[in-house]
Length: 323
Image (cartoon, rainbow, N blue to C red; front, side, top):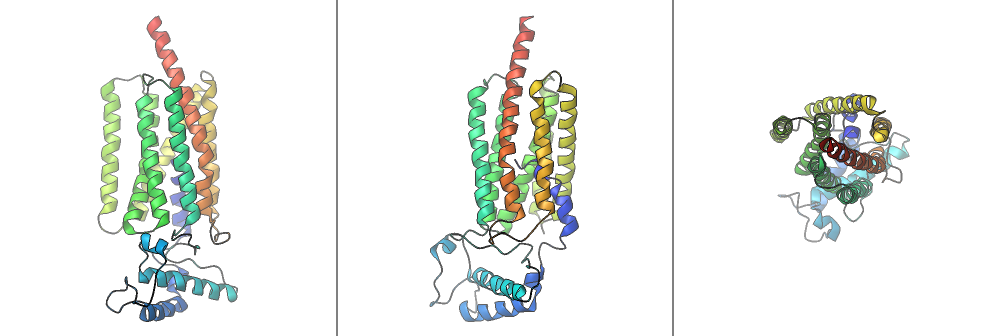
């Protein structure tokens, strides 16, 4: 689950990374010279997106739109990485990312696969939620919308990690925040589920308008990483605090409430993978990819809580009507 987990991470990333647009690898003279030679030898002079007639591209790379310049960057990335390692220097990053081995043209195969596992977890658990919870239960449709938002965000994550473009980056970051904001909105709606419909409608509308404003701001001009991270941090912290307060108030009345507390704990623990970043193992598994893997089981736990809570709320409502 990438709700609160993606949130506080931005704070640590901002403290640890200088600039996501430039890194030691792509700034090195070795890489710059390699790129000049590769572009001159392999790409057309007028359009570096096109290969010269005698150069053939792998079919998977063609499908994922790897241009001639992209292929040169990939080739020179590995030449530069090997040069750094041979000199016993630290493994460099390139344009803010570690060097990854491509798999069938996929840029970050491990992150793609683990994002897919999260997508499957949400899809399967949504099916279980619909099977175990009656559609007349309180918040039934609220949690369905929440699940749809998460599924959409994980699809965008898969696409972004498969191929990094400005558009796929915008969709990944933007809709990742939609999960964070949706979790915050649903936490509020859970606390006031007994309120009038217009109160809940105002909360939902306010969240939608805030997200549209957030997404439109990121879409205009240069992508504002700091603003996006600050929004994620603040929203995630408020969400976490809200759920912990709810647990403290409800733990005696609702025996299943420990699940949401454990979920929050797992969210916090998983942040260690992002804080302690390291070069990819086997040039495939980096800390970010493993962080995606660590979100799968908490997703199952969260839906288990949602099922228990929705069933309990329905029984309480029916008992109140019977009085």
